[in-house]
Image (cartoon, rainbow, N blue to C red):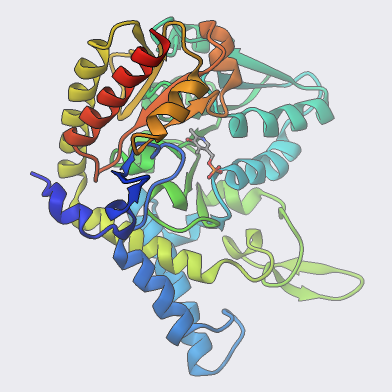
Length: 405
Ligand SMILES: *Cc1c(COP(=O)(O)O)cnc(C)c1O
C-alpha cells in the first residue's frame, strides 16, 4: 500500500494554498510535480558537481561525465533497454519523435510510401510525420478508434502493407486515458517487417514499461512527466537501428573527427547528442527515476487504480456530466464535458476552489473532432493524489452547476 501522506510530504509544492483553498493539483497529464530528492539533485549538481562532460581531464569534469552517463544507465534500466547505448537524451518526447522522423524517417520514407499512426495521437506524434511525408510525397494513414476511445486494432492491421515504412503509436492517450495494446500492434507490424515507434510520454509514469517485452523499435519519454525536470527526455532505439541512422544535428560531441573536407561521427548514442546536453536535467531525471523505483509500480498502479475508480464513480454522479474516453483498459485520466458549460468556464471556476485541471483540446485536436466535442475538461492523476482532492473537484463542479443552473 502506498503511504500517500508520506509521499505528499516529499512534494513541497503540494502544501500550498490557492486563494485560501488547498491546492488540488489534477493536471498531471500536462506535467507532474517534483519530489524533494529531484530538487536536491539539481541543487547539488550545480552547487558541487557542475562541469562540461566528455572532454575534461580534470576530476570535476570526469565526475559530471560519470553522473550524466549514470543517468543514462538509470533510464535504460527503467525502460529495460538491453544497454545504456540504446538511450539518447533529448529535450522531451517531442524531440525524440522528431529525431526519428528526421533521421530514420527521412532516409527510409520515399514517394508513395506510408506511415501509420492512430486517431488518438498527441500533435507531437502527428506533425513530425506530416512534415516528412509532405517532403517525400508519402502518405500518412490513420487507424481509427471507437466511440469509447478504443483503438480499432483490426482496422490498423488492414492499413499495414508493403508501402508501410513505420507505425508510430501512442502507448497511453493523454486526452482519453486509453492504454493501447502496443505489444499486439508491434506483433502485427513486425510480421510484415515494419518497425514501430511507441510514444510513452503519458504511459511511463503510470505503469512499468519494458521495451524488450513490448518489442518496439523506438520508445520516447519526457522527463517532466516522470516527476523530473523540464528540458530533458529520452529516446530508446534498438542499437542496430540507431547505428544505421544518420545524425540529427551537427556540432560538438557528436563527432569523432572534423576537418573541412570530412567529418566522422561519434558512436551511438553520442552521435545524436550534438552540443552540450542538459547535464543537470539528466541528473535530475535519474533522481526522479530513483524516486519512482523507490515507491514501486506495484504501489503506484494500485493507488492510481483506486483513485480512478473512485473518481469515475464520483464524476459520473454529477448531473449533466459525461465522461469522454471510457475504454476498458484506461488509466489515470478523466476527460469530461458538462452540459451547457464551456470547458474553459469549468476550468476557471474550479480554479477559484483551488482545483487545477486542464481544459481544451489537450494537443489532440483530431480526438475532439472525432468525438464531436470542441474541448473537454480533464482531471489527471498521479501517485500523490488523494480521494479528498477528487471530492474537492466534485464540490467545485457542483458550484459550476449552480452558477450555470
Ligand atoms: C505530453 C505528451 C507528449 C509531449 O511531451 P513533451 O514533453 O511536450 O514533448 C507527447 N505525447 C503524449 C501522449 C503526451 O502525453
